[in-house]
Length: 256
Image (cartoon, rainbow, N blue to C red; front, side, top):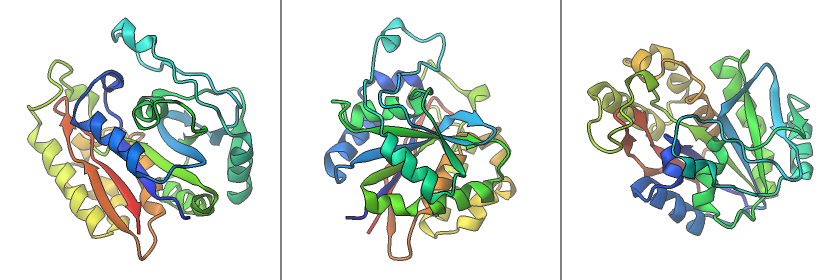
């Protein structure tokens, strides 16, 4: 069975302990998607000067956020890794992605997966973003991951299409969305549905991009997901919320 492809907006670390429409959509995903042999998460929170992939057998939980309630730092997601699948990634990318057996799993992965697979019994790998690659090069690398879908691997981009921390309102998770955030989110919805991938790759030319994407590390994981969409496959949204005024939680699944 060919595994679907997913993109999730992960948003604030407060979603780790929240019960809201977004976290319920993740739990529904975990119940309805085919059960994967492993998950590969392209993380907005791991930037490197080459593409790396975690290959530890027991990856540590990384708490890559600061100033949040103590309860969040007591959550542990003790998932296994998959050195074998990581080696497969190295092979199919012709070593454009290299294994790293020391790096753990950051919250772009585990804060999402703890809702989808709360038993932490699915092996997890994480892929970094090479800061020296252009958006088009990230998209092309995403295409190379396609054989993993036939090997039982669920590929998941984890970031946020709209992500402006300078404008964020942590005191109000729901409501109070900025007009520019809504407009850009709706524009990307239209482009995704119309498969206008070139315009999404060249996002800097889109109206409102400067406010919606002041830095692109949260946007780039989405390009990996859409790069894997095949001709006969459709894209469906599973969450379209905007949180904290300036963070789009738009998430989608690509499948037949």
